[in-house]
Length: 158
Image (tube, rainbow, N blue to C red; front, side, top):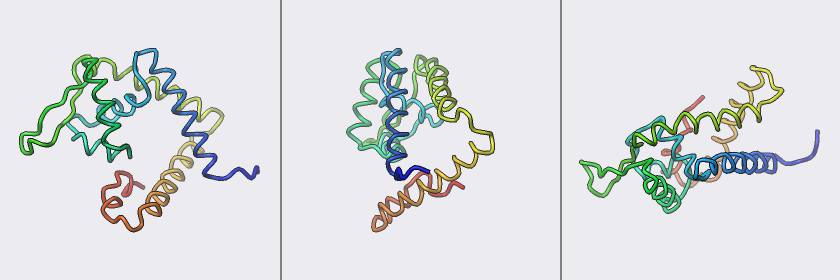
């Protein structure tokens, strides 16, 4: 096998994924940055904006900019949390809900392309192995940041 490092392989996969998603989202007048917000909201309406930032491992400012664009396009609405006036919860609008099937289709097309030529067993194995690598990598990156590890959304998945 080639001597290409694991980090390089992950970086190439991440960057090519981002380019593909970004190109497809441009057709909708959006970008890859908004794509990830929409994907999370498709599963978790009412998530707090700062929780979303943590879930995506993206700084709060970048999330705020992505949400601003989605809000300007009437795809997402911010609702102040009734229990904590400083917290903002995010919800898809009706137009946002209608866009989700297209966003999911864009994701599935990328995944099909990425998994091309792999068996179902290989697909399952690679997902499990990448999950373990992500968990180990995140834990190593934040080994002195106990709070970050406790909040890591993937830490308990198997």
